[in-house]
Image (cartoon, rainbow, N blue to C red; front, side, top):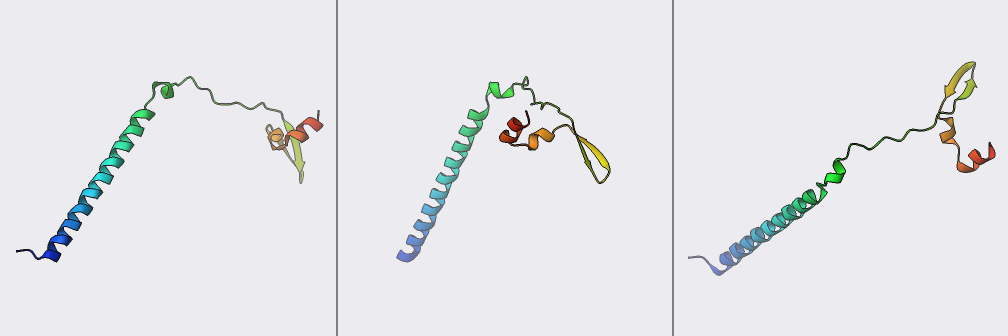
Length: 85
């Protein structure tokens, strides 16, 4: 026969297993819910176009080397862009 202390530890262990199963089941249900919600037909659209920046060539010379930077204007802050015009 089981002693009283042994039955309490077995009951506690079973309760922990049952609680762990509930947590895992809840996690699976939530994960599936998000996976189904994210599967949206509008997200499959392939007509999206990548952004294209305007090219404004700037000639930079340093140490006798000439370099043309088409996107130098991106480094400027908005205030600097307005002052150059």
